[in-house]
Image 1 (spheres, rainbow, N blue to C red):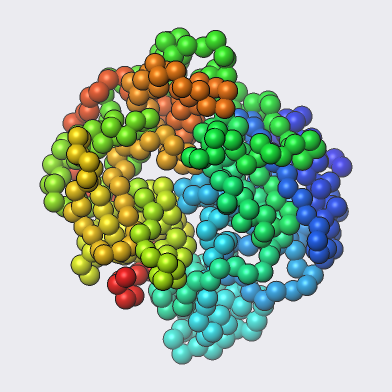
Image 2 (cartoon, one colour):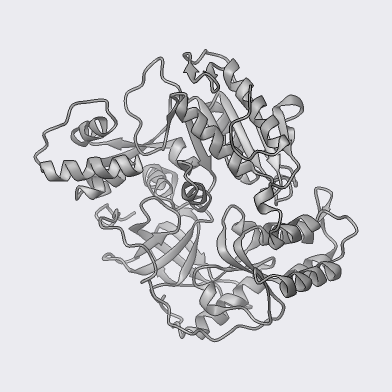
Length: 509
């Protein structure tokens, strides 16, 4: 078939055509925009593999546009409506809220893997509103909603295609219309997975159970998940089902950050020579900066990226000290990182609820203040579609040379958090920020250690991941030092939804 009329490189066009051919075999013809019902027992797993700047996101976005034009319904994870035998569906997924929000910012309707594995259960009355919004039912008459509220919901839905956002605009809270969450039982159809280098084998198995047709997009130069022995799930995909993008797309060709990232592929490159390259780039281009100390203002929203936990803890301690944060409590505006959900198996429903709202391991969060119940915290989950709510929290503040962290806030069970002013490069994978600070002394320590992962020096993989987290500016921090903050911590810079979801009304775990 002919390549679409966009600025594809040759390898992008070839990958597009091979994926389109595979979809046509599965009953989705992108060229003629025709669909046939999904055949039982047929499936395929493909991988699009390329380094930063090779055009994976452009290709993903174009495939989604073509699927929608062909009549494929995009599943968002918030509401799905009645199943039809002739319906073809696709979902665009990412492992983290931040990665999904990056795609949404580029016009791709992405959600997280958790939001597809677990689906919301709607109150029957408000299910009628969702059906009407999606064009599957008549305009409902509901005592709780005025005509003006319904009109407002319809306007928001047309703009966002999000049922929860539409219902929130009508004055409802999530607890009004979502009564719980359930594990998905029925399979879907086509899955497009971004940042698939972050997937472990269990997640991959879950996805292949749900999606007969699965297309993975991943970067082979990133860090493999812990306990994967340096291997990524797409490494097992061979032959015609693996599509490699080798060329750098022309819009990224003059990007000094990507130039530095790709220079790391040179097997002869030493850390010292690479640091000279960073310095040379900084002299030529303002998008690369050499800094003698970490910027404490920037750390409030964009963490310093480090290799070692000891470095992370020292930087966090210095950050809190610079802002005058007391040891026994958090200040509104302090950044946190979700460290998982600490709930026993009998509270499985609550775990699903927290994860579906964005509190998955590694999620960046801003502390807004204490909740109305002991042990609860008001939170803003960066990148989540409904970012503000209150949840039972276990906040851990680690200190240098102390084995046990200090816990200023703790419910008996709930979401656990570490401080987020500095983050290991492993945990930063999948996220991006406009400006990123990379702590060079840690990369030097990794180079001195001489460790190798999947045939490449570990320091080069760490540097590659850290550098490619920067969307616009790379700040190369050269010394163990921290600047004084120029402004106090706060939350005025965060978007404030009109109707934030709340977990405070639920029984404390």
